[in-house]
Amino acid sequence: MLDRLRHPLVAVAAALLLTLPWVATFVSYGGYMTVHPGENIAPRTAVAVAGLAVLGAAFLLAWGAETAEKDVPQAFAIAVLAVLAVAPEYAVDALYAWNAGAFEGTERGMQAANLAVANMTGANRILIGLGWSAIALFTVYLARRRGDEAVEHREGTLTDVVTLDRGISTEIAFLLVATLFAFLVPLSATTFSGGGSIGGIGLLDTVVLVGLYVLYIAIIIRGDVDESEEHVGVPAYLQSWSKIPRVASVLFLFAYSGVMIFIAVEPFAVGLEQLGLQYGIPEFFMIQWLAPLASESPELIVVTYLVNKARSTAGFNALISSKLNQWTLLIGTLAVVYSIAAGHLGGLPFDEKQVAEIWITAAQSLFAIAILSDFEISMREAIALLFLFVSQVVIEFALIQTLPDPRANALSILVLYTYTAVYVLLGLGLFYRRRQALRDLFSRTRTNAREAIRPGSAQPERAD
Image (cartoon, rainbow, N blue to C red; front, side):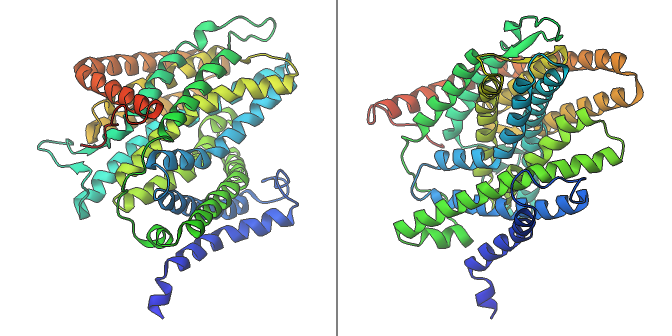
């Protein structure tokens, strides 16, 4: 009896069962966009039921990605995982961008545009400030209990490091290029008459950022299928199947988990927002921080699962891939959605506050990439990322709660620029100290790109 309960398919069935209460709720209310926490369903119920569905779907997604590593390059499998895991963030941001275009030239349209930028920057900063830092600290913590080849214990206080696969150099290099370009987005700003806007995400940004991601995918999909890490449990069982059933199982896991995440995360996020309103949390603050935290939850669950299996390298690869697709595809598609809704080619406008939000997000990304440029992240560096992120959010929240809007907004912008300067100075200092590592990073990326374009011309460099 116990052997039957340990069968891998029992775990798959349990994950599927976690999603069924939400499926029943979804069907009983008539489908997508008909479940409205706070209106026709209690917020706590929506959070509980949709949250269980997200948890179950995250496990299914992780198993699908691990199983796929037998047939496609690991980087590509992780890229697919990353896109599916953060799909809800795309949906939420696209909704705000659509409303901005549909109500173009009105106060409602401008507010929706600002919310789209705020939600996007919040999601990106959460992914690094909480995701990268917390997962690094969690990895070191687990390694002290049961060991992990990716963790090196060094003499001194908080000096243990998580080492990364050097094959992730392509992702880090593309993320650095996208980050440098993001600094230029507000510089192309123009004043929109009557709307108070001083910037916009335009179609040129779309071409550059989406083009970067397409080029990245073109490189990694042509890579070799390496002998992946030894798997256990569900992935090992599914990988033992013959190719057609195995591929079919991967497609099912990706499709089902992707759909479930897409339809469950928004009610989960809205339910959290409604609970936040009941406790006096400002709506704009929740759109920037609480909603993205909910939409990022599948990704964080998947990475936690991988780290818990001592697959910290794959976990960090997934986090970096998620940051890359959000920092390119997510930003790049906002102008497209806005233009379709507006009925003409145009750029998503944003105000002075969102200019500062974009710059601090780019600056945080610059600092984080500088940390990873030598393919390591220490406990000190993880704590620095976490402290800078949390302290900025806490200070801004205190300003919003204690001061009138005009004064709070002015001081909030000052805080954002101050933290931007800190991130940039720290990042540039690290890049200078690690300039040889940076040269090696781009050298590896060039080698991988040449091999993708002309197979056999060079051998992509992998983990040492």
